[in-house]
Amino acid sequence: MDRSSSMKRKHNKTVLCAFVSGSVFGAVLVIAMSLPM
Image 1 (cartoon, rainbow, N blue to C red):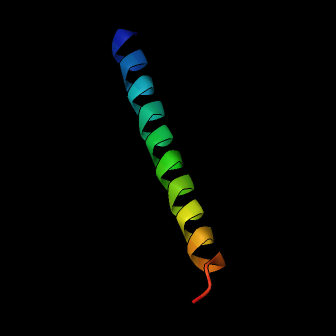
Image 2 (image 1 turned 90 degrees about the vertical axis):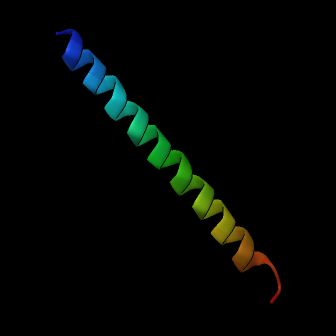
């Protein structure tokens, strides 16, 4: 039970990190595209 909870928490942390990195990448991409070349 405890191990399952730990696994779920670790999985949630991984998903959160991926979501944050994806959001940052998207924001940087939008800013780069909006800037005049």
